[in-house]
Image 1: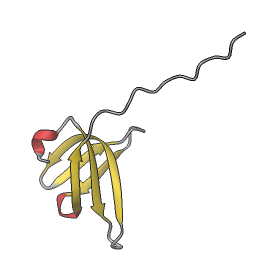
Image 2: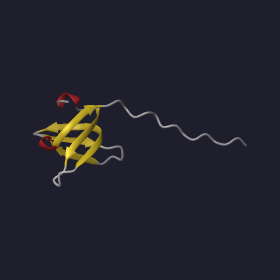
Image 3: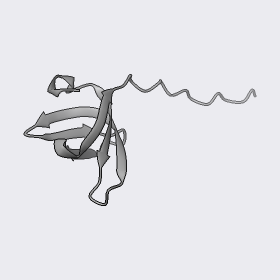
Image 4: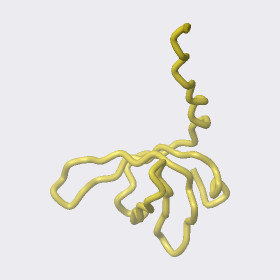
Length: 73
């Protein structure tokens, strides 16, 4: 991954201060001055320090959601 991936959907794993890991999936909005900003599906932004980044990759767009079919009348 690199700053050229801004605008693409990514999956990131970060190390938390307590030593555990957390995953973030969404669209990479910015990669500036050692910080990555990711917009999650619910619209919230997650900011991740590059130093806390353990792994990351570009992933395909989510599958289209299917609406449940209506029962026959």
